[in-house]
Length: 398
Image 1: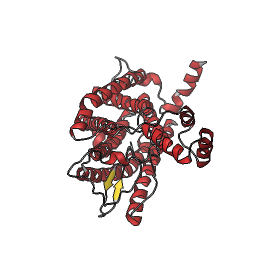
Image 2 (image 1 turned 60 degrees about the vertical axis):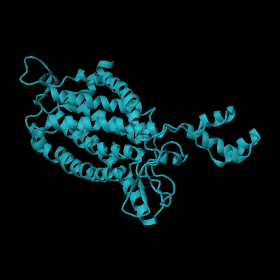
Image 3 (image 1 turned 90 degrees about the horizontal axis):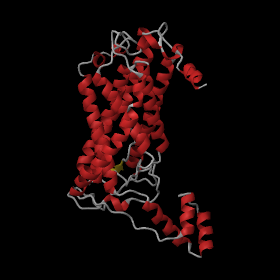
Image 4 (image 1 turned 120 degrees about the vertical axis):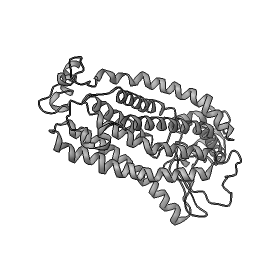
């Protein structure tokens, strides 16, 4: 039964060009080129565990000491007093309405104020310290820097980097080199590790958007690998890693309270984000897969599957771009903003983490702080306005 389902799913008429069979692109010593082996898609799973262990090692022995040397304190909020009934209610749902507060206060013979205070303390317990968030961003920044550098290095002499038509010329009989093999395996392993670690990392309001993003990326990598479309896949990877380096670097700089450096890096990130995610990606990558590819390769059903996944990523890019634009507009026009467009799971203010040590770049208290998308502790980023700060946090993208 399972074999029947798999055979139906991997129908050659769906995934391959006309007059092409799986046997034609199966790896073998008798073939003129080296083809991708679908069994190798299992390798990223153990590699993902290796990356998780490597991340833990780097965060504990490199990033945490480095963060402490910059003056970041690993402070934790005060614990809520032990109360089993309130804890049970909190475990049921961390969000609470006024009607529930009144009921709990009456049941436990407490004032509404006492219940609210306990709830705030309990929710703040689940929030990670500034040092933990600094280490998380340093890990992401380090990996993106490595992966982009490696990808750019190995693709420099590849003809499809300079002429995207070569992603389709000669398809599907395009050879796979060892460097591209490693680029694919490590990238897929990283997105698997993000998908796994997302469940214990700092939980954000866009948890499910990020989850969909990771799954869509893994699906694109997997399908393009099986169908020997790895050339266009490498370009998509390279394009996405570029801006992420500066986003996580800006957040790490903010946690270290180096505001001016944070502002400069964020400006670079914004420029790269717009150019790569809203420029090159739709008007170069998707344009080539939807306009140029049909001119060079006979169409087959998988073509529409790949383009749908690429457009799904573009839709997520547009959502995250809108969050940035919305916060910037409100901050500049109104000078203040209440609430949070894209916050972490806790509604408790992170103000205690904003300035946990003194540096020459500390933000003065008489200036206004605008809470913006994703408050992992409210990473505030200066915009060109003397009294307004534009905070950005967490992965508004990936």
